[in-house]
Length: 274
Image (cartoon, rainbow, N blue to C red; front, top):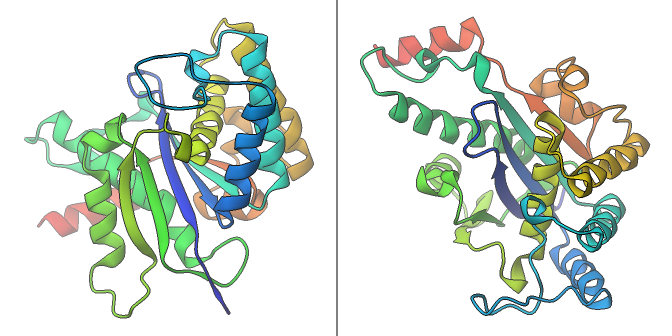
């Protein structure tokens, strides 16, 4: 089967939350077409950058900063494009109320170190099955991975971990992922990364809804669109019916895996530390 050159965009939401963390990844096999369509929406709506601090033509699509109906109008058209194009979204959701650092270290290690390990492992667990079983058949080879530089994932050296995990001991001229890059999402070249931010932010808003009517309207619109993809609801009760392996198969366009620790996983990690 032929290989496919993907671009993979990584973002997170709830970075400083005590309740939820969402790590999202957008997989785009035809980056040029989606990027052009996203730019066209902003051009038609004159959604331009007015800040002198950034050298960009377009205003960034960033759900956290949504304030007006105009922001929602852009987001809705972008979400329509997400459904239309053959890209797909995966996210892992961490409920901090069940966080147990013992799954990621010994009792004598600091909590910060355990969380650093956890972030890396969660990103790896989200990415791994997509490289083994791509949605559109074939195989992923020579992909490019982009991570927003302004996120905790950047500070936790997640890129270095993923690079080691998916290129170490690989023999051949075409690895799963050829390049790993940190970048700023606000740049004009990174519209697909902004779309990943929008999707990740919508999932976080479902879990921790803001009072803002424009933010609520945005994530509810995504929920309406996803019904055509078999996603009946976006709330935790819906997603928790599914394990990590089955959720992406049932919902190939958009899936949210609610991570939970398992006794078997803890036992395996304990054996490795001996």
